[in-house]
Length: 333
Image 1 (cartoon, rainbow, N blue to C red):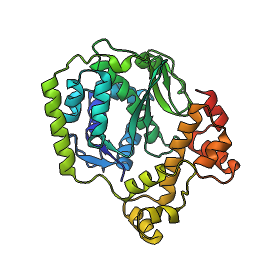
Image 2: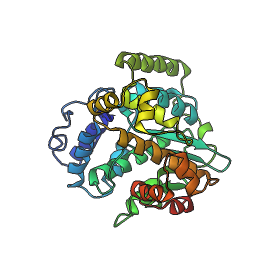
Image 3: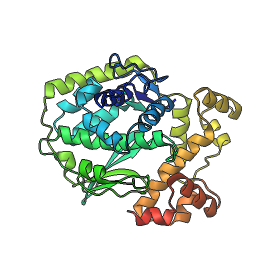
Image 4: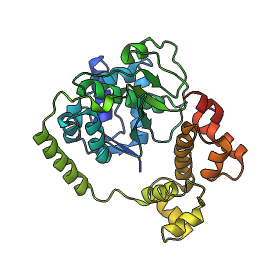
């Protein structure tokens, strides 16, 4: 089941209240109340979370997610946030908190890649429809939230040199330019922040090694109390990742890998409110982007690696996932 910490919808409601809007209707059916902030490890289903954004976006303009992100403080995430604040560098903060990312979210994550020219932070979101205003607003928030987090942590903050957003450009992009300091590239194939290559080495202004070790232990303790993270959907996803090199990604083959029957696998996935086809599409999309981004494989070769028998079927699926053809995706960087 895909989830998000209740701290995030609470923050949405808090910002709405600062703008003289009653927060309670926004949080309707979300499982979060405006009366008091939830614990950082109290989660809600992402569909309920998207509902909060849908109701908010009916009242505010397209820049509202950026406003919410600007209100974010690491302290809001309690021990998870305090761990980031106590690390020595941005790179260490990213790596350590990534270990405990399910304290914040399940089913979506950030990825950091470094090369000689740049540091790229990519938001790998939950599945969703960019035509859904709530989903689109949530995606805007999470990319802006990472930029805000880096801005707060850095002893000598680095600003992004490029920002990529999957949705089309809004009527007025001025708020985006003001928040990021650069003109975003709308309609991109991914959600991505591009920084100078030395981002990982930037010191954290509140570094404290003793507190870092303490909050690391506390995060580990909370994770252990949450119990195993691996439901059947997680196991299927891991199995699919292992065959994204031309292996057999059929459901029968994956069920065999997991020592279960196809029918039992389908039933267990249904109990976790997902399906085999949904998981396969997620993993295929993720690996298609990775392979294409390398620039060393043709689209037909990528199609084979991720399990498509015919390239045209892959081209059609990729267009559905990203709104771009494989060639357009590569041309955008």
